[in-house]
Structure formats: C-alpha cells, structure tokens
Image (cartoon, rainbow, N blue to C red; front, side, top):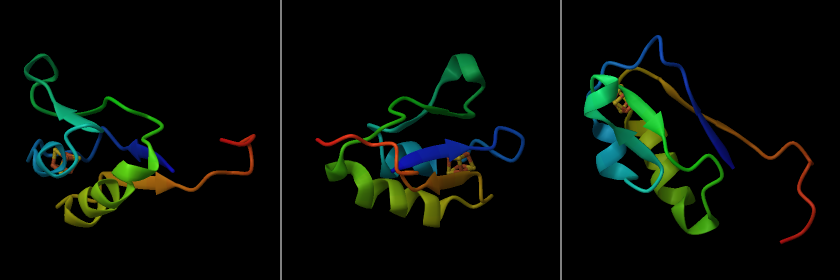
Length: 73
Ligand code: SF4
C-alpha cells in the first residue's frame, strides 16, 4: 500500500494526522497542510490509512495498491 496526496485539494483539517499519525502529519511549517511521513507504511498501519482516506473531507488522500514491484518481505 502506498498513500498519496493531492496538495491542491487539502484543506488542512488534520483529520488524517489524528487518524493515522504515523503516516500523515499536518506541520506548522507547511501551514497545516498534509505531509506524508511514511510513504510505505507497514501492514499494521493499513487500517488507519484506509480510515484516513475515507474520512478526509476533501478527497485528498488516495491509496495506490502495490503494482507488482515488491520482492518478498
Ligand atoms: S484529512 Fe484530508 S483535507 Fe484534512 S488535512 Fe488530511 S489530507 Fe488534508
């Protein structure tokens, strides 16, 4: 799983960093807009990432499924 964001649509609501704080951050130096802090989150974080995607009010978060590039592990 690879979360991606569209910086053009984020409204800095910070839902995502509350829902998945190990994956998303809303940093002051970024005016509260979303940053991804873990681009390849471990499986234990996937439910939180999916919840963040569902709860984002602006549809900013998308999840790319692995495109067959993984090699074990
Ligand atoms: S929940 Fe969506 S709109 Fe809110 S900060 Fe996160 S990415 Fe931006």
